[in-house]
Amino acid sequence: MKIKNLVIKNKLFLAPMSNVTTLPFRLLCKKYGAGVVYSEMINADAFIMDSKKTLKRSFFIEEERPIGIQISGSDKKNLVLASKKIEIELKPDILDINIGCPAYNVMKTGSGAKLLNDINKLGDLVKSISESLNIPFTCKIRITTDENYNVSIAKTIEKSGANAITVHGRTANQKYSGKANWDIVKKIKNEVKIPIILNGDIIDEKSAKNALGSTGCDALMIGRASVGDPYLFNRINYFLKNEKYLPDLSKKEKIIIFFEFLELAKKHDCLYITNIKMHAQHFTKSIVGSTVIRKQISESKNIEDIELIMKNFINN
Ligand SMILES: Cc1cc2nc3c(=O)[nH]c(=O)nc-3n(C[C@H](O)[C@H](O)[C@H](O)COP(=O)(O)O)c2cc1C
Image (cartoon, rainbow, N blue to C red; front, side):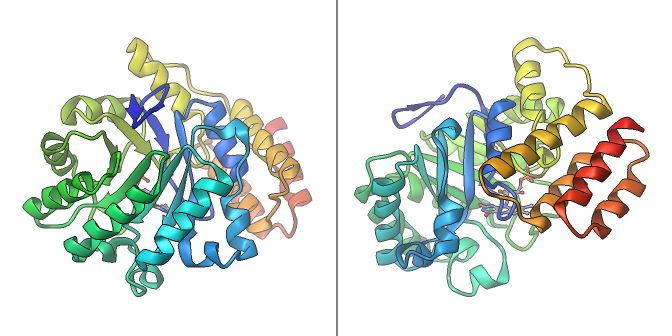
């Protein structure tokens, strides 16, 4: 598929996830088959103020390409400034704006899903950003309970110059619970010409095939199911191509991928105990008999302890 002039080698995108899709995790998802990876959400106001933490969050390396940087904000001037600064200084392949974050702290500033409430303001914002950019520009939205309004939002975004839309088939009120509504995503897909990337509840080979088949969407974006299982991209790509399943990874193979993650985190200076702990928990979640391990991981005080726990786990 193509987003503007960017050719993407498959139909699987890694979703932007705050505190999850850090550089080492993105690299791993890329290695195991993600066609596009997205950064964590970058606050536009903080980015233009050169906030150290925000700059670190937006950092990526060449090996990750194609990569999208996602920004959030509500002030048009700052969003345009941040987008342009990101385009010039970081040169990502895609700039994405978050129009779906349901977090209270984000919505109270008028950002995230709050942007869905005022279609005229949203259209103006998208138009201003798209006119200022040369790189492909995507919008990530949530659905609302009003079916016709969803289509109006998508049409407005398209008319305002965005090159693709990711639709998360849940409302902001649903946050991350309940089933994603693929019928609404399909309705949107049928009403616009730019590529639609479906997001929500892609968890395995079957759900991926069903989602593409039943909605006609151009690509799929995967969030939570990839956490602890970046190899999922490989399995889904294989299934979409061959209609056959790859064998499941063994316990050892799964833990080896965790160690790959750890090595990348060390190499790229991303060794944060909470983050490593969280990923270690996820990498063990599907392994039979791993409850004890997860308790040990959650009680560990440093990264060396986690390393030791995981090494022992491989050998037992
Ligand atoms: C921990 C976490 C952090 C997230 N952070 C972001 C974010 O920064 N930007 C964004 O657009 N969506 C964010 N999301 C939403 C995901 O991108 C995705 O839309 C959602 O998880 C639904 O997809 P899934 O069913 O495949 O998980 C986040 C989700 C989770 C679970």
